[in-house]
Length: 328
Image 1: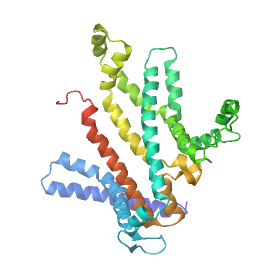
Image 2: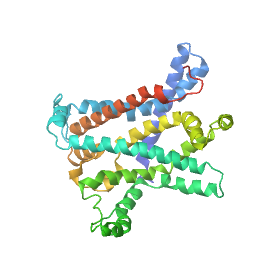
Image 3: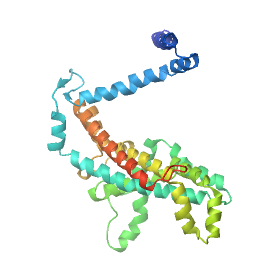
Image 4: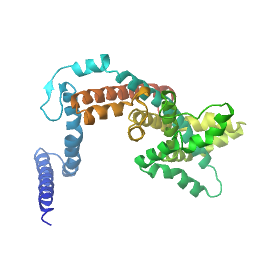
């Protein structure tokens, strides 16, 4: 019990501080003439605001400051201006290969993932026997730990004893070729990670598409059938336009997630000749080489890349996303 007493006291101190802050906010707002209901609301969101400022906003601005410094964790940071950024763009031999493989991975994996999720959702939206069982099976991958999934794929892609190469060996044998060394040959590293990304077809993305398909108004299909539209025409002219807001959401979230790939790449050691993903480069600079300033600069470059691509998708959405009730 004595071992936990200091932790318990600190917990009480933090909880009391938050409670006093909430009371001070409520009292201050009431003194300024704010209505009681509004003052209560502002006071109740204070714990979230404090958590955001301490655990999110402060680290963001701290990393921005550190990106302009030379900081090795042990010694205080030293201001060096833009030297980290200049070194990244001009001298870091790992940076441009990392940008290349990260963007190519997002370029191929995101559209394939969206198309695959939509196809699975369409198949599961039909009225077939045992549909609940199929939906449960297809959702299971989303609840598996990412590390376990990475280790599973590492075994599947093993060049000697992996299941995939054991299946491909007879086919390659017909042409007197050897199965690919997926993570040892730079030519196969990117295709291997793209294949692994298709694991995400089943899971939460599929469930979101399934809900979107169920919300497409039935009378639109009835009108299309009266006009003589076949199944493909109904999908192209009715289903696809009505679910474009969900496709837009999946596209934005997919780009953000793909550009930040880390767990699978960290547990599957591919040959460095193929390039490292940006998050792996940031992790190695910060937590293996203890160059936190340099790692912060890399992180802000990745942030700028994600922001640019996300804004591009947002700007293009006006041309292809349909919002019911929106003024055209």
